[in-house]
Length: 167
Image 1 (tube, rainbow, N blue to C red):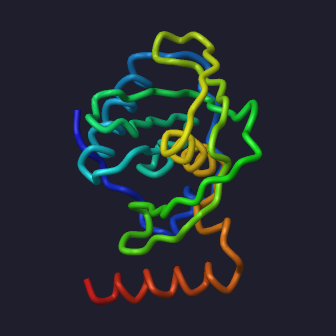
Image 2 (cartoon, rainbow, N blue to C red; image 1 turned 30 degrees about the vertical axis):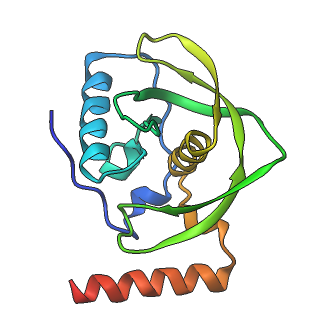
């Protein structure tokens, strides 16, 4: 497959709620392959389908040190989140050149349909948990900077627009 173009902020799909996936088909597997190629080309630790213009609830995550441990998810949802928070610098290829520290639960249990078409509950901790939550936000039409105060969000977006103008 191939690495895909990431939609630039403020594309309307980035604010749209993605549609549920009914079954794992060859088309879904092809989307996942493109998403993995795109994630690796960034490089990043996760990607949601809406980021590349596919309006389906699909995500891929690989926060392993060695890579090659990709988890493919359809219709992911958080079942449980720890009360302990973890701060991490988050970014998005949809708004390149900027990042912000975001606090999210340190650990989450997520239910999703896996690449075999079976429902799975899986625990994620640390960077894995951060990335999974980041992707689930994308599938709900939210960006990481929505977790910032309005002033910080505005400053971040203006900084990204300024950088884009220079490019």
